[in-house]
Image 1 (cartoon, helix red, strand yellow):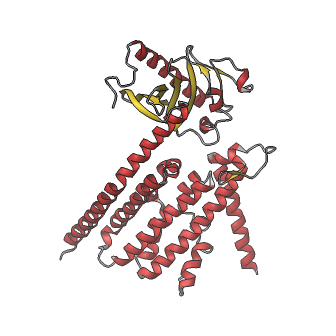
Image 2: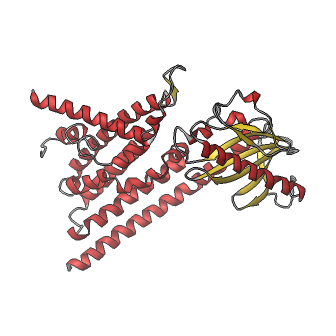
Length: 202
Length: 201
């Protein structure tokens, strides 16, 4: 599993260690905000911002932090960046901030971020930590994008707010409701596992 | 340095730095966030009071504000009532537009809601809900028509539709509007709604 090159550090987040499909981390925001593509993108970017900066900072000061209080320190650092992201969205993108509701503050407890801090940033150099965070963010955004595209198109007949399916299409309301999130995620998970199995057989 | 004092120093340091940093971010974004709120309210007033370009606070109490919508000359074009009530899961905040004689409801704007996406959240959707609240009789209590709702024109002047699958949200909006209606009429009788009145800014 330990990767050697920067490319590997980045790429593992996209597939091998994809936070959603492989590590099954950050399920709460994944399921909750993917009812529209714009929400998925905004949540992905906000999480990426927090993940990249907190990974960098944690990796930078990892030697100063006593082992016993490391989790507390990580949480404070993560919470700081989350609050910055939250205020920034409220100030400059009020509609997005409104539709994400409580889920931006909840990035604090998103396991992807604490997970990367604990599993990677606290053991590797700042540079590699940033690359790792970039890869994980890209994987997370990709997963949210796939999930929210399927849910918005089927659940509202729109993509990014634009109507893509004609008037004949009766939206499957269940897709924008919580059950739709679980169903979609389950099917995607099955597909990704099947692909992985095929790859291994070859 | 002993381990325990190092833990105290590091945690305090991290906490202080983050606190200081957040305080400055808070100061930097505070005005902008307040401005966004103000602009949202102003936009809602203009949208529910036709002919108005600005709003003036005429009466204010907790969670209930009556704005007067004014045209460029400063004449009263109608009232915009900022009010809220409990929806399915959380507060629904509405701006209700009424004409100057309190006899006609111009329309509603939803300022905030956390109803179920795809169901109750349709209260923000014009074709399926808000259009039924336009140009209605404000002299009588409103009532709901169960779905399937006919065309907006075929409902009576005090009747509005219910969203299929979201009766609770529809009823919540109904009761918020009816309560606001009672309240604003009472205020009118007490003579508290006039431009440049004691509560004017």
